[in-house]
Length: 132
Image (cartoon, rainbow, N blue to C red; front, side, top):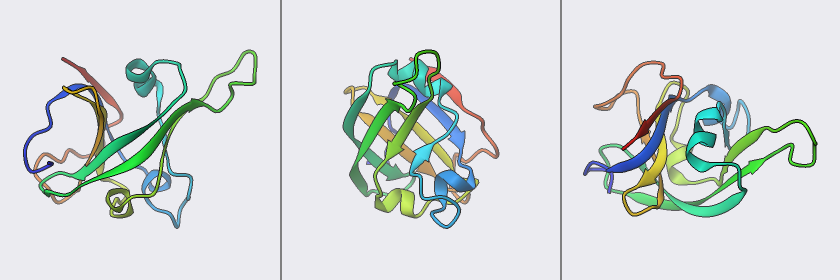
């Protein structure tokens, strides 16, 4: 639950842009700036269920994530993306909120939204990688 701390094994944190958070700006459902995510997830395509929560709230929702190279058919280019399915957490996200994405101690992927009005919020983070 997100009321208790999530003990991440490895994670990234960033401030969400409008196209990542607001469907009226873009309905792409993808996180940008994925060089740091590639350091955590590697280069193999996968689809997995992940937990999504909002810091300070007890609800956790399970939603699909897909990590893939959008240019996998191109011989010399790669462009990795992390696609997320619609879910109640990301429906509440706004530009400027922070998102932490990573593996918890059980090896499961967790995405925690840190709203601008919550404890632990930091203004304008451009991907920070944490490994324990």
